[in-house]
Image (cartoon, rainbow, N blue to C red; front, side):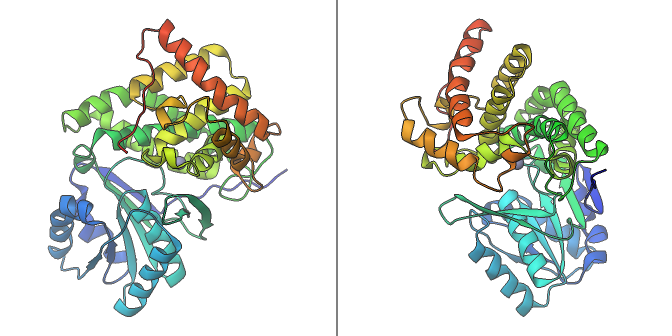
Length: 378
Ligand SMILES: [Zn+2]
């Protein structure tokens, strides 16, 4: 029988106001936390973090951060850890600050914690980072021997974040079940380096169910800047369940197509989860998913505000050269598309990308949904 592996963070803390409890949760991990946060994030939560730590008499330092987790930004953090004598590094904010903090903590051999300020991706819980170029193109996955020791998410902060962040998180989390299901049917390994456990596959499925039940109401809550049970359920689905589900349940075509899309400059204004959702749509087409499942997925994600067409990510059926390049990049050796239960080729991805445009347009017409338009804050 093949080996299975399940990996997870040591502690997950979620709720409104939990930033106040940082002074309880951080000190056991190490002295003098180094907090990585860009100026926007620090402007929003710097005061809460500072009061949470100073009330517990925890000395800390905060360092700024750019847009992407690049090899250079990681190395600069390692240097900072070494000269500053920090015993724990905290990624505070979006997926990039969190990924950079993990990678630097690993290289400097100290503990790391993730404090996302939005439920915008499932990066925070995992033992891996996604590293990009300065220009925002996917460069590599880096794998670590440990998950974060702590993942803490304050839902009162999430409720204040732009709704588009949560939309992205929902896209990332919906992919988790579709990819875990495909990995379970196939023979490939998960990001944890072995076959999926039944537990991780089940958690991925729970994430999918919670999102269908709660995601639209959670987006209403964020528009109203209100913390509700639907928001709590959606944050847990996007952060904890999707995180455990993707890492130990397996990624497949959707994330490989996402990674390939990052090579097209047209897509750079989109969030991770927005691009992933086009990948999930294409994966369902490649699988020959039954038409009701595919059409319901298109309807639900259109209502959430996620792209499921080329048009929405800035591409068209005429962009033959770009579509060919994306299709080739999606199937390079080592990409997660090879976890699919059949051999996926560039030709199949190319056909799937084109078909997504037409199928989505038909479904939208049939179900009275708006036509696709460019989906981006370029
Ligand atoms: Zn993802």
